[in-house]
Length: 257
Image (cartoon, rainbow, N blue to C red):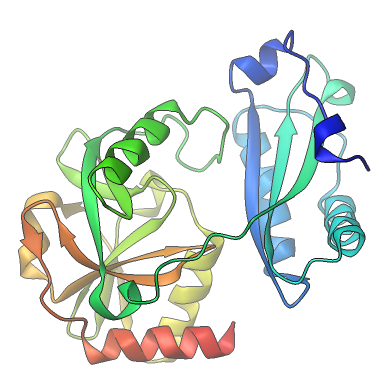
């Protein structure tokens, strides 16, 4: 365990400079790492998806995360976990650090956020890899335009996900999600859908073309930091209000998790 200033990644590491690694971001509140077991399992699944061999067990990583939280005496933060590959499993390196938490403006939970769009398809949708250049450029473009996030558009003109969030639409009491084979299966996303089913929502997985957004009552994002965040506008489509059923789902999720 080292001060961040003393923690280094070798510049000569081809694996790091070529993005051969996977990562997770875990929310810590009241000193507890939320959904830590699922994040650690997904880290391992991401590594498997790109053939990154390593010797770390999810339970071992969980303990390291607990140790870092205790050592830093933090109540609220984000934990970043980086697993960088090597030539062999023994060469893989694991880095865990505390970052300042990201807070969404509270008014956006009432009014909804603005999203831009960006044409890009991730090569390994189920792997949360360090190869993030297109997503970085898309997010930078969104930030320049005062948007919360950028929605990724595939070659068929369909919305898949945000650069750092999962995407959904809502019509009456049905929640629509892009096909799971096309997206990163977010940990927060899984819990939101589980709760939504318990609340009586129907869940449908199907392509969501960008030009079909006006046919829905609402759209929203889920992520580790934002939880459930309504969308006010995407490109030329605007959702005037946030439906009461979505506000209720948000309130229940916040109270539950």
